[in-house]
Length: 349
Ligand SMILES: NC(=O)c1ccc[n+]([C@@H]2O[C@H](COP(=O)([O-])OP(=O)(O)OC[C@H]3O[C@@H](n4cnc5c(N)ncnc54)[C@H](O)[C@@H]3O)[C@@H](O)[C@H]2O)c1
View 1: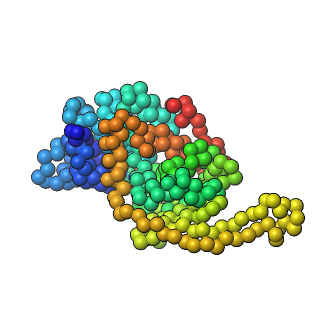
View 2: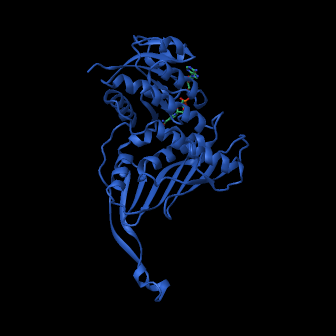
View 3: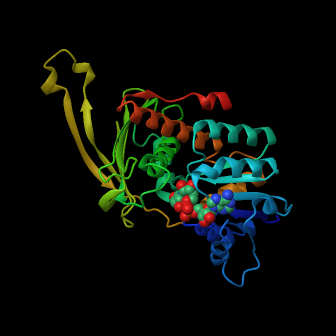
């Protein structure tokens, strides 16, 4: 099969990672790098590269050799750039977050659908070996019924000029939730608490609390102000509990056969004491392959285009994440009230 002709738009902090993985992929042929700052685009491909450089999106989109574009510009530009690419008949991969509102995200989803083009959100973590394994474990019932998800993503982060910490960091946690939870189990509402103790003008740290289907709950802690870096997610199930520490390369995943059982049959008797029993079984740490997630992202994008199917993290997944982020923003404005998640997914479907 012929390699897919692609262009990367945006060669700032993240774009060069896309460029490197596209260049390493036999599925793709990098035709253009587009950035308003041409020197930056040139640096990203190297001085002797034959990849063409342009500050003009129009010039890139006019080239019929470009079949697909990967967009790594700031979130507020995603709608305009992605829409122009779709209207030019190109398949599109957009960095997280898919757009800067659910309304914008719905426009992109509808546009791609109308044209039969692939729209993919780069929810990078969903392509890590750890998250793929978590999804399998949940799907195969290894954890039992999911009872809670608790995730911490904190470090000394770059305080972003245009978005708060929720829009910067929580897309990771929310896209992981969307990917690993059984279908239909995702958050129904969001309560958000944020703080700006350094006077940046937007939340620099905060907490999202999200009821899940049944009596389960998810929580995410995101923070730009922490001197230490923590990337840990705990998923508690009725059978087993999983701990994912993304900073521990030798033991990223640990599965604990430990938990609490309540004997419902004994109800009514000497409740408090008799009913609770604790299981203390083994812990296992599954071996995981070491693979760069972005390589899998590029492979999935090219595969979806070639096979004419939706990618694992399609526009609809990007839109579900936007709806959660929007509910979080509304909740912040309402002092942390629980805000139901919007309905634009159904509108766009
Ligand atoms: N998947 C991940 O883990 C991950 C990590 C970091 C950033 N990101 C995402 O990547 C995107 C870019 O973030 P960044 O940190 O690289 O930003 P950045 O500001 O470092 O780079 C953005 C680049 O886009 C260029 N640009 C802006 N508007 C343009 C336009 N209209 N046409 C062409 N070029 C344009 C800028 O000149 C700049 O070089 C964001 O959506 C961000 O959320 C994703």
